[in-house]
Image (tube, rainbow, N blue to C red; front, side):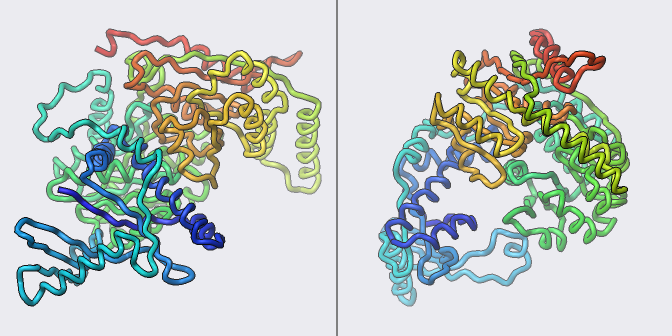
Length: 588
């Protein structure tokens, strides 16, 4: 049996703009080949994901590797500004020269399945009145498959990415439902303890270190509530497209196992399914960006909220001033309210912290970094603080900030403490000496750049670091807010050595092979540092003896200092944390 599939890749606005600007058909085909490669790269990256979405990626790879699935990607070009290839036809060939053809399909939404009036035409070759229709559909498919359809460019994937897909395909696929259940790993028993704490309290926050399974714990809570008949719908909310995509993929796999079936709706970035969830939330989940949350909460009756679970991942993000205004009293009608974070406390923001606790409840359970390392859930690590000092240029920038403060006070518009601290902190985070200190040490330690993420404060500062890295390797990329996600996929696949970024992947992304984190910038509050080092502390099944490395920059005390500066506070804490060792008895 073989499947031949023609699909239309989803183009970003950047892709569309690029294609519009290319003058020749050859240039457009070359760029379209890059788009096709990105689609397959994303699937390759998902193969190692320990979830249902990873299993589906493995099945896809196995089908391709065993020549059960042939792919073509179609790009419409029948007009100057085309949409997508949206034709829905299919052919099934059976024995005895029998063929079934269909045209049309229902949308994969609640409306498509339950409420819309849909039609699908099906034709059978063995019925005299339908033979010709089947022949026409077969001809249309073959014409498109062979790239002969007018107004359509059809490309077959090829090159290294296809070979990587074949190389990563499993040798065989087992029926997961027939496997005997394995004994639970005692290292992860904290998840069940967290579930029990939440079920007793009904509302509150689980404070669990990055990499210890907050998502899995939330899904266990979801399963428990459904099994006990406590809820019939849920809302999962957070910030950041990468994290939202990761949750959506995890929940898509979860929904496939539910009986009766649950639907997963998405409302973030390119997804706009809030309205469909609001119309009928029964046996449905909504994954939504936090900034859009007020739109759905205002449309749901209190009766529905009482039978609904709401989950705030990275819950510290709930305390921003705009959300405090928009979501005042919005959570009151929910019976089941869950917050997740490695560090739910918002530094220097008593108002935000108070709002989070009033909306969701207190911290119910803690599983910090130290406990996770001792139990073997996270890896041990080495900590290397590199000393630096301020330059005359840095001191001039500090003087300018204090001059600005004085001018603002004179004008009757004084700077808030948070404004002053933020501007001063940025100077230390972008200190002029750090790149040269890093360059000096890198001469003897180029291995630091293998499987490394380097966190910088700004793109401009990152440009200096790129110049240094380029002396040792060309296998690096940046991953800033406007960069292509393919850079992250390439890094996850091991195709590049180093990734330079600002805040974009501080939370929520799981790259287990990461070995080094370099902190050119880190805030005084522990939140950001915990999230950043949490990227590298995840254990790697392919490297059981993994020992991570955290490289930091620490400014020594100045003459006359009576208190530790922010760098010294962070260094003292990380030095102590790096002394934590795995306890074999705790993980047994």
